[in-house]
Image: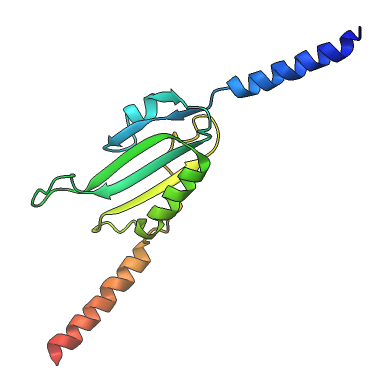
Amino acid sequence: MDYSKIVALVVLLLIGLASECSAHECYVCSNQTGNTEKCLNTVKICQQGEDACLTEIRWGSTPYFSLGAQKQFYVSKRCAKKEICQRIRTKHMPYCTHIWYEDWTCSACCLGDRCNYYVISAAPTVTLSTLAGTMVALGVLLRSIISS
């Protein structure tokens, strides 16, 4: 009996089981006002097949209408399949504007244990020079309307 083949088979089997059992972890929270407390302290072991961590960031007022309500960040984090994560990211891309006076939503996907600790968005941000240029252009436009 050739024990070397049996030992090699057992080792391969154990390596395969160990890789299947290795748990992927993500930070999880739902609609928290900012990336604080629960979003930084709650970790979940993801289900089999959930190989990515999904983070969604929403900027807006409270879910119910309130006159003069302040806008704020809402953060949600969870485990997801990589394909679903990319689909959600693509869906939110047109609404990921980072314009302070509009409601917007962005999402990000990452791979690796607890990779979604920080909230990082790759959406373009409005710089101060862009904002100043827009204000000047609006001023010139209003001036030309008023003077005519």
